[in-house]
Amino acid sequence: MEFNGCFFTGYLLENYRKGADKLPLRAKFFKIDKVTPRESKLNPSKNEVRKEIVIQTNSFENAIKAQKLIFYASILDCAHYPVNGINYGPPRIYPCCNKVVISKENYEYLGLWEEKTELWDSISEWVELACRLSYRKKYQYAIYKYYLGCYLHSNVPKHLNPYENYNLKLPKFEDDQIRMGLAIVSYYSVIEELGFDLGASKDNPSYIKGAPNPKLYSALYKKILKCGVKRVDFNFRGPITSIEKYLKGRGRMGTYKKSRYAKSNVRDGSVDLYEAIAIISNIRSSVVAHKTYGKPIKSLSVYDVSNANHLARTLLLDALRNS
Image (cartoon, rainbow, N blue to C red; front, side, top):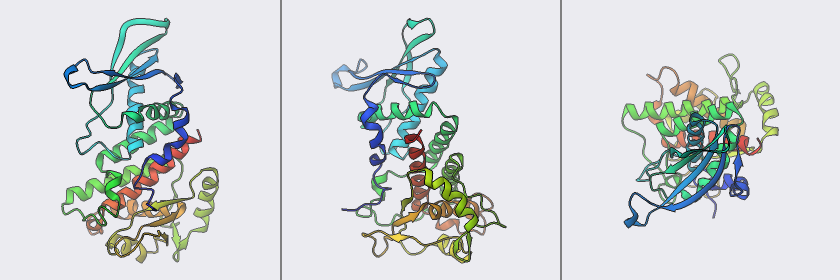
Protein backbone atom coordinates (compact mmCIF):
# COMPACT_ATOMS: atom_id res chain seq x y z
CA MET A 1 0.00 0.00 0.00
CA GLU A 2 1.48 3.33 -1.02
CA PHE A 3 0.94 6.53 0.89
CA ASN A 4 2.30 10.03 0.51
CA GLY A 5 5.21 10.80 2.84
CA CYS A 6 3.16 13.65 4.30
CA PHE A 7 0.88 11.13 6.04
CA PHE A 8 3.41 9.39 8.24
CA THR A 9 6.02 11.20 10.29
CA GLY A 10 8.11 8.48 11.91
CA TYR A 11 10.04 7.14 8.93
CA LEU A 12 12.43 10.09 8.78
CA LEU A 13 13.55 9.41 12.36
CA GLU A 14 14.82 5.88 11.79
CA ASN A 15 18.41 7.13 11.79
CA TYR A 16 18.01 8.38 15.34
CA ARG A 17 16.35 5.34 16.91
CA LYS A 18 19.44 3.14 17.09
CA GLY A 19 21.42 5.58 19.21
CA ALA A 20 18.64 7.35 21.04
CA ASP A 21 18.58 4.96 24.00
CA LYS A 22 22.35 5.04 24.53
CA LEU A 23 22.40 7.51 27.40
CA PRO A 24 23.99 9.70 28.55
CA LEU A 25 23.81 11.94 25.48
CA ARG A 26 26.08 14.96 25.30
CA ALA A 27 25.07 18.27 23.77
CA LYS A 28 26.94 21.55 23.48
CA PHE A 29 25.77 23.01 26.79
CA PHE A 30 24.04 20.11 28.54
CA LYS A 31 24.03 16.35 29.02
CA ILE A 32 20.99 14.09 29.31
CA ASP A 33 21.74 11.58 32.03
CA LYS A 34 18.61 9.45 31.81
CA VAL A 35 15.03 9.24 30.58
CA THR A 36 12.95 7.10 32.93
CA PRO A 37 9.26 6.48 33.62
CA ARG A 38 7.91 6.78 37.14
CA GLU A 39 4.54 6.53 38.84
CA SER A 40 2.66 9.77 39.34
CA LYS A 41 2.99 11.33 42.78
CA LEU A 42 0.18 13.78 42.00
CA ASN A 43 -2.60 11.24 41.39
CA PRO A 44 -1.33 7.82 42.54
CA SER A 45 -4.83 6.37 42.47
CA LYS A 46 -4.99 6.78 38.67
CA ASN A 47 -1.84 4.67 38.16
CA GLU A 48 -0.54 7.22 35.68
CA VAL A 49 3.00 6.95 34.40
CA ARG A 50 5.16 10.05 33.96
CA LYS A 51 8.43 10.60 32.17
CA GLU A 52 11.36 12.35 33.73
CA ILE A 53 14.59 13.54 32.17
CA VAL A 54 17.73 14.33 34.13
CA ILE A 55 19.53 17.27 32.52
CA GLN A 56 23.09 17.98 33.63
CA THR A 57 24.27 21.50 32.93
CA ASN A 58 26.05 24.40 34.61
CA SER A 59 23.07 26.75 35.03
CA PHE A 60 19.33 26.80 35.37
CA GLU A 61 19.14 28.97 32.24
CA ASN A 62 20.85 26.28 30.17
CA ALA A 63 18.47 23.70 31.61
CA ILE A 64 15.54 25.80 30.36
CA LYS A 65 17.20 26.04 26.92
CA ALA A 66 17.63 22.27 26.88
CA GLN A 67 13.99 21.57 27.76
CA LYS A 68 12.83 24.00 25.07
CA LEU A 69 14.94 22.24 22.44
CA ILE A 70 13.46 18.91 23.52
CA PHE A 71 9.95 20.32 23.19
CA TYR A 72 10.65 21.84 19.75
CA ALA A 73 12.15 18.50 18.70
CA SER A 74 8.87 16.84 19.68
CA ILE A 75 6.99 19.22 17.36
CA LEU A 76 9.43 18.35 14.56
CA ASP A 77 8.79 14.66 15.21
CA CYS A 78 4.98 14.97 15.22
CA ALA A 79 4.85 17.49 12.34
CA HIS A 80 2.01 19.37 14.02
CA TYR A 81 1.16 21.42 17.08
CA PRO A 82 -0.66 19.46 19.83
CA VAL A 83 -4.39 19.22 19.13
CA ASN A 84 -7.34 16.88 19.67
CA GLY A 85 -6.79 16.39 23.38
CA ILE A 86 -3.07 15.61 23.17
CA ASN A 87 -2.10 18.16 25.79
CA TYR A 88 1.60 18.33 26.34
CA GLY A 89 4.23 21.01 26.47
CA PRO A 90 7.80 21.68 27.53
CA PRO A 91 8.68 19.66 30.64
CA ARG A 92 8.81 21.63 33.84
CA ILE A 93 12.33 21.96 35.19
CA TYR A 94 13.23 21.45 38.85
CA PRO A 95 16.66 21.29 40.52
CA CYS A 96 17.42 17.75 41.74
CA CYS A 97 17.54 18.29 45.51
CA ASN A 98 19.58 21.47 44.91
CA LYS A 99 22.77 19.44 45.24
CA VAL A 100 25.97 19.86 43.25
CA VAL A 101 26.94 16.68 41.43
CA ILE A 102 30.08 15.57 39.58
CA SER A 103 31.78 18.98 39.88
CA LYS A 104 31.11 22.50 41.08
CA GLU A 105 30.17 23.55 37.54
CA ASN A 106 27.71 20.73 36.88
CA TYR A 107 24.23 20.71 38.41
CA GLU A 108 21.41 18.25 37.82
CA TYR A 109 17.94 19.40 36.88
CA LEU A 110 14.82 17.29 36.55
CA GLY A 111 12.69 17.81 33.46
CA LEU A 112 9.29 16.34 34.31
CA TRP A 113 6.51 15.84 31.76
CA GLU A 114 3.51 16.83 33.87
CA GLU A 115 0.91 16.26 31.15
CA LYS A 116 -0.22 12.88 29.97
CA THR A 117 0.73 12.22 26.36
CA GLU A 118 0.54 9.27 24.00
CA LEU A 119 3.96 10.16 22.60
CA TRP A 120 6.18 9.18 25.56
CA ASP A 121 7.85 6.38 23.65
CA SER A 122 9.40 9.04 21.39
CA ILE A 123 11.04 11.11 24.13
CA SER A 124 14.46 9.49 23.67
CA GLU A 125 14.30 10.48 19.99
CA TRP A 126 13.42 14.05 20.94
CA VAL A 127 16.44 14.14 23.24
CA GLU A 128 18.71 12.95 20.42
CA LEU A 129 17.36 15.63 18.10
CA ALA A 130 17.77 18.29 20.80
CA CYS A 131 21.42 17.33 21.30
CA ARG A 132 22.10 17.70 17.59
CA LEU A 133 20.26 21.04 17.50
CA SER A 134 22.42 22.43 20.31
CA TYR A 135 25.59 22.48 18.18
CA ARG A 136 24.35 24.68 15.32
CA LYS A 137 22.70 28.04 15.93
CA LYS A 138 21.17 28.16 12.46
CA TYR A 139 19.38 24.85 13.12
CA GLN A 140 18.03 26.29 16.35
CA TYR A 141 16.68 29.33 14.49
CA ALA A 142 15.20 27.00 11.88
CA ILE A 143 13.35 24.86 14.42
CA TYR A 144 12.02 27.95 16.23
CA LYS A 145 10.52 29.08 12.94
CA TYR A 146 9.19 25.58 12.25
CA TYR A 147 7.50 25.58 15.65
CA LEU A 148 5.92 28.96 14.90
CA GLY A 149 4.60 27.64 11.57
CA CYS A 150 3.06 24.62 13.31
CA TYR A 151 1.56 26.89 15.95
CA LEU A 152 -0.10 29.03 13.28
CA HIS A 153 -1.40 26.06 11.30
CA SER A 154 -0.61 22.37 11.05
CA ASN A 155 -2.65 19.25 10.48
CA VAL A 156 -2.38 15.88 12.16
CA PRO A 157 -0.72 13.93 9.31
CA LYS A 158 -3.22 11.06 9.36
CA HIS A 159 -6.01 13.54 8.61
CA LEU A 160 -4.38 14.13 5.22
CA ASN A 161 -4.81 10.46 4.33
CA PRO A 162 -7.03 10.45 1.20
CA TYR A 163 -8.77 7.30 2.44
CA GLU A 164 -10.03 9.29 5.43
CA ASN A 165 -10.46 12.78 3.98
CA TYR A 166 -9.93 12.94 0.25
CA ASN A 167 -10.47 16.70 0.06
CA LEU A 168 -10.65 19.00 3.10
CA LYS A 169 -12.67 22.14 2.40
CA LEU A 170 -11.18 25.60 1.87
CA PRO A 171 -11.35 27.99 4.84
CA LYS A 172 -14.30 30.37 4.65
CA PHE A 173 -13.03 33.09 6.94
CA GLU A 174 -10.41 35.69 6.07
CA ASP A 175 -8.57 35.43 9.40
CA ASP A 176 -8.03 31.71 8.83
CA GLN A 177 -6.70 32.42 5.34
CA ILE A 178 -4.21 34.97 6.71
CA ARG A 179 -3.14 32.65 9.54
CA MET A 180 -2.52 29.79 7.10
CA GLY A 181 -0.66 32.13 4.76
CA LEU A 182 1.64 33.31 7.55
CA ALA A 183 2.30 29.67 8.46
CA ILE A 184 3.62 29.18 4.90
CA VAL A 185 5.82 32.27 5.34
CA SER A 186 7.25 30.75 8.52
CA TYR A 187 7.83 27.34 6.92
CA TYR A 188 9.59 28.91 3.94
CA SER A 189 11.77 30.88 6.36
CA VAL A 190 12.99 27.50 7.67
CA ILE A 191 14.02 26.62 4.11
CA GLU A 192 15.85 29.96 3.82
CA GLU A 193 17.60 29.37 7.15
CA LEU A 194 18.92 26.05 5.82
CA GLY A 195 20.27 27.74 2.67
CA PHE A 196 17.80 26.25 0.17
CA ASP A 197 16.03 29.44 -0.89
CA LEU A 198 15.97 30.04 -4.64
CA GLY A 199 16.89 33.71 -4.57
CA ALA A 200 14.32 34.35 -7.29
CA SER A 201 13.22 37.87 -8.15
CA LYS A 202 11.15 39.73 -10.71
CA ASP A 203 14.20 40.08 -12.95
CA ASN A 204 15.42 36.57 -12.20
CA PRO A 205 12.28 34.37 -11.87
CA SER A 206 12.24 30.73 -10.81
CA TYR A 207 10.77 29.72 -14.20
CA ILE A 208 11.50 30.98 -17.70
CA LYS A 209 8.92 30.01 -20.33
CA GLY A 210 7.62 27.23 -18.08
CA ALA A 211 11.05 25.66 -17.45
CA PRO A 212 13.28 26.04 -14.36
CA ASN A 213 15.62 29.01 -14.54
CA PRO A 214 19.00 27.40 -15.48
CA LYS A 215 20.99 29.86 -13.38
CA LEU A 216 18.95 29.29 -10.21
CA TYR A 217 18.64 25.56 -10.85
CA SER A 218 22.40 25.04 -11.20
CA ALA A 219 23.09 27.04 -8.02
CA LEU A 220 20.56 25.03 -6.02
CA TYR A 221 21.56 21.72 -7.62
CA LYS A 222 25.01 21.96 -6.02
CA LYS A 223 23.30 22.06 -2.61
CA ILE A 224 20.89 19.26 -3.56
CA LEU A 225 23.83 16.97 -4.36
CA LYS A 226 25.07 17.34 -0.79
CA CYS A 227 21.78 16.50 0.90
CA GLY A 228 19.80 13.28 1.02
CA VAL A 229 16.60 14.77 -0.38
CA LYS A 230 16.01 14.75 -4.14
CA ARG A 231 12.21 14.60 -4.34
CA VAL A 232 9.34 15.20 -1.92
CA ASP A 233 5.71 14.11 -1.88
CA PHE A 234 3.12 16.87 -2.17
CA ASN A 235 -0.64 16.83 -1.68
CA PHE A 236 -2.86 18.26 -4.43
CA ARG A 237 -6.58 17.73 -3.82
CA GLY A 238 -9.81 18.71 -5.50
CA PRO A 239 -10.14 20.62 -8.79
CA ILE A 240 -7.21 22.79 -9.86
CA THR A 241 -7.27 25.76 -7.49
CA SER A 242 -7.15 29.47 -8.32
CA ILE A 243 -3.66 29.59 -6.83
CA GLU A 244 -2.43 26.87 -9.20
CA LYS A 245 -4.02 28.69 -12.15
CA TYR A 246 -2.52 31.97 -10.95
CA LEU A 247 1.00 30.53 -10.75
CA LYS A 248 0.73 28.54 -13.99
CA GLY A 249 -0.57 31.60 -15.82
CA ARG A 250 2.59 33.44 -14.80
CA GLY A 251 4.86 30.50 -15.62
CA ARG A 252 5.71 29.91 -11.96
CA MET A 253 4.65 26.31 -11.51
CA GLY A 254 6.16 23.25 -13.15
CA THR A 255 5.01 19.65 -13.47
CA TYR A 256 5.18 16.66 -11.13
CA LYS A 257 4.84 12.87 -11.21
CA LYS A 258 1.48 11.68 -9.91
CA SER A 259 1.34 8.96 -7.25
CA ARG A 260 -0.05 5.54 -8.12
CA TYR A 261 -3.05 6.04 -5.85
CA ALA A 262 -3.89 9.44 -7.40
CA LYS A 263 -7.29 9.53 -9.04
CA SER A 264 -10.23 11.89 -9.40
CA ASN A 265 -9.86 14.71 -6.85
CA VAL A 266 -6.70 13.20 -5.35
CA ARG A 267 -3.84 14.57 -7.46
CA ASP A 268 -0.93 13.87 -5.08
CA GLY A 269 2.50 13.31 -6.52
CA SER A 270 6.27 13.30 -6.23
CA VAL A 271 7.90 16.65 -6.90
CA ASP A 272 11.51 17.43 -7.77
CA LEU A 273 13.16 19.34 -4.91
CA TYR A 274 13.75 22.46 -7.03
CA GLU A 275 10.13 22.45 -8.19
CA ALA A 276 8.89 21.89 -4.63
CA ILE A 277 10.87 24.84 -3.28
CA ALA A 278 9.72 26.95 -6.22
CA ILE A 279 6.05 26.12 -5.57
CA ILE A 280 6.23 27.15 -1.90
CA SER A 281 8.40 30.17 -2.72
CA ASN A 282 5.94 31.44 -5.32
CA ILE A 283 2.90 30.91 -3.07
CA ARG A 284 4.73 32.79 -0.35
CA SER A 285 5.91 35.74 -2.43
CA SER A 286 3.05 36.02 -4.94
CA VAL A 287 0.04 35.27 -2.74
CA VAL A 288 0.54 35.52 1.03
CA ALA A 289 3.67 37.42 2.09
CA HIS A 290 2.84 40.85 0.70
CA LYS A 291 -0.39 42.55 -0.31
CA THR A 292 -3.14 39.91 -0.31
CA TYR A 293 -6.12 41.94 -1.52
CA GLY A 294 -6.82 41.00 -5.12
CA LYS A 295 -4.72 37.81 -4.84
CA PRO A 296 -6.24 34.29 -4.91
CA ILE A 297 -5.71 33.75 -1.16
CA LYS A 298 -9.30 32.49 -0.85
CA SER A 299 -8.23 29.26 -2.55
CA LEU A 300 -5.38 28.68 -0.07
CA SER A 301 -5.92 25.18 1.28
CA VAL A 302 -4.65 23.10 4.18
CA TYR A 303 -2.76 21.09 1.56
CA ASP A 304 -0.72 24.13 0.52
CA VAL A 305 0.25 24.58 4.16
CA SER A 306 0.95 20.88 4.69
CA ASN A 307 3.21 20.86 1.61
CA ALA A 308 5.22 23.77 3.04
CA ASN A 309 5.34 22.02 6.42
CA HIS A 310 6.48 18.73 4.90
CA LEU A 311 9.18 20.36 2.78
CA ALA A 312 10.61 22.38 5.68
CA ARG A 313 10.51 19.40 8.03
CA THR A 314 12.14 17.03 5.54
CA LEU A 315 15.04 19.40 4.85
CA LEU A 316 15.58 20.16 8.55
CA LEU A 317 15.60 16.49 9.55
CA ASP A 318 18.01 15.72 6.72
CA ALA A 319 20.32 18.54 7.87
CA LEU A 320 20.23 17.24 11.45
CA ARG A 321 20.91 13.67 10.32
CA ASN A 322 24.03 14.81 8.50
CA SER A 323 25.23 17.16 11.25
